Length: 440
Figure (cartoon, rainbow, N blue to C red):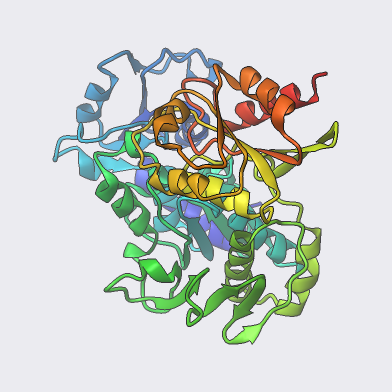
């Protein structure tokens, strides 16, 4: 049975779609959930995707595939865009208002309290922490969104008193017309530039996390990203600014001027920052700080985020495959307090600026830098630190083999690049790293 509030949500979705011509743009995980809902709403459905759709649930539904699949957008009332579809500047002005998404409809029509989390890095950890704090405190809650659960997958079953914790990627936020009740904006670095016309467009998509907030809503934002004009209440967070409402000094966390001692399995100052923000967001939903100080001790962290693969022949191997930009590789090294002597970096070259990582490596105590194609090989001429030994690897197997030969203490696999073109996703890449490490 749907709760009373959720009936309102479901009815609003039904009213929005019924009698309309709807194009599902991109038929991956979200597209399949969208199709399941649309079949209940009596609308005219079609699917557009670069690749042919073979799913049995899509049989009998008109399809537009191939190079010109985006042309189908002109002929439909509603375009349900999946996050993975890259539009850049290909959308005609008269078509853009018809584009929506699962995240947009969740924000516009669901009356449940929604905590939305975005940022270039840390959003999965922070979202999972918020959900961890809420669930351990007995607050009805679900974790959805970019974490791997399409936002509308709960549309028929969600209870009215459930708090929704939704991780929101830039792709999910790009076409929204509403913002969450509690918006978390962690940070902003160059990322996903292959999906946007430039950094400004990427930044604008992220800013939709708060752009449509109302008085009474709350924005928890990195103090370097405070918007000039916002109607919601602003709470600042920082790793560097001790005047921020939530800040980290050394390895100590302060929230609202009061120290909050934390014992955690998570490594690094950046994770104290994530913990502090997650605590504040959960506190807004009624969870006490003492309860969270206890429950954070049982939070294990995410797979492929500074994940300990094991110690072999006296060397500890760390899988940080989720690292897809320079700042995360830098944070990964710093999390081990100077003990990392080998780092493996490189992956898909998306044209992002690697100056931060290059400068860090040149001035670090790291001994061995093992470079993967394509981005790793591209930065090789710029690595000139006096302590560095540079190794040019052909692939990940070659990189791990070289790491086994030269590492004395810790080998960190933190690619600072996307996996695409080499692996299906960062999970597959991380699994391959772990497998290679464990091979004799």
